[in-house]
Image (cartoon, rainbow, N blue to C red; front, side, top):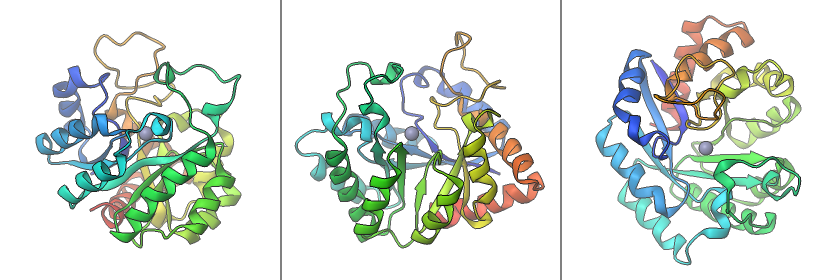
Length: 276
Ligand SMILES: [Zn+2]
């Protein structure tokens, strides 16, 4: 069975197509998926998905892109959702310095979203991580161009005993060992199938077998030549269908020179250890 360690099934790009998506996910033999909330505004939608689909594990967090627009009572709401859902995890949380770069390409999801300074992102990330550690929930971390600040947070904050996930890991191959020692799992994303992403691909050749996961981040991060597209999707758009997960598994097995069936079994075991 295949496991999607990180997606956003609650996003409105996917909502009108959930029936088709669930059908396609059954066809690729999906065993489980972690659906990550990003702001209290979408946490109810994550709950609804977990109630509708038995394979959904809910996760609640303030995404680094949403730090500046978090409500004043975000901590109370965070605790409330996580206490009400004892099997839920913490995420998506993290740090992003790319959003602070003046010359960056525009992402439609960032339209009108004010970026929070990195110090504020670090505080919000550390608070959520500490809560995850205190309650031994897994934490899913997004990190873009902020590896130094992330190490600072990881070294100064208690970490969940069961571990944490560096989703769509884009750090260097050299840093894998250090993050592993701190308890990290690393998820290989559909977008890394792109052969031009040589550094990220090299990193996944050195991730220890017992820390390896696979993800889509759907509806974000599509592979270069997707097998699955959303109904009415315009060519060249950025949306990712969650069933492209199977492509990421196949590519990762080739990249690591592993038998697809043994990779599948290892990832399933890792997913159950960290998430279930
Ligand atoms: Zn995400």
